[in-house]
Length: 303
Image 1 (tube, rainbow, N blue to C red):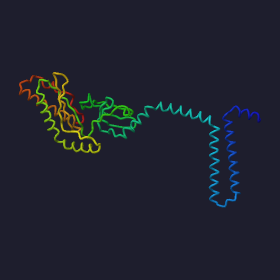
Image 2: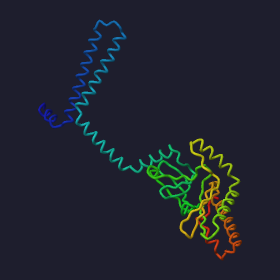
Image 3: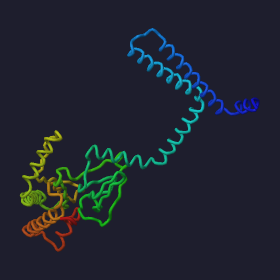
Image 4: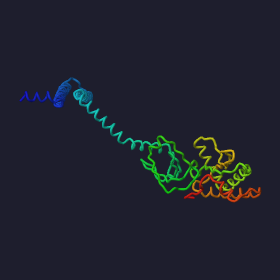
């Protein structure tokens, strides 16, 4: 019987470790009993000192048991650790996208990049944020292009992992006001200087109702962010895409929920001013006005 037991122990490493662990436990319990008995028979009179020594003996025996058990089971613990690492690596690889989405959500929340209702552009997708979760952000697509404000009727679900690697463009710099650019293509033979001045005057008239409010919002933003104060008054500049054409670029501040209505009003009034100038100069031809002013659809589903 004893020989059979020894044979089993020699063949089974786990059985050997269990026996050695039990032996270590018994040895340390015996050592603790001897030390406690010696302490109680000592000439120490202070009960507090004896209590401290009892605690120290118990803690010392426990520490010796932990160290001894680690030494006995070292090989098995190493194998177990390697197995756990392999499982964790596999788990991380399998849930990589979920982890990236969650991390992107944390980055987005910590930086305050945008919120529901903002108009953003991420990875070529432009739209209004309608929902956010820990994993995805949903936007109502706006387009086509960056100069239009119509909803396309499609919702786009963006994984939050995009916000870790792709720049985010937020059009709502001033909360409910935005900077908007409109393009008015002209022929180089037209009086571009006069039309530029007329376009600036139209923009001033249209934006008169909200310009002061936008200035106050910008002042608060400058104070909060420590920025140089940008001009928010309408500004017209000229662009020369080729020798025969001139583009008037109008940049102005407008309410984010009235972009479409405002752009349509400005384009309509500019068309009328251009037609009047062409009539005055005697250069108006059929279809010559309507075909020249473009640069984006002014429609806006929420205007």
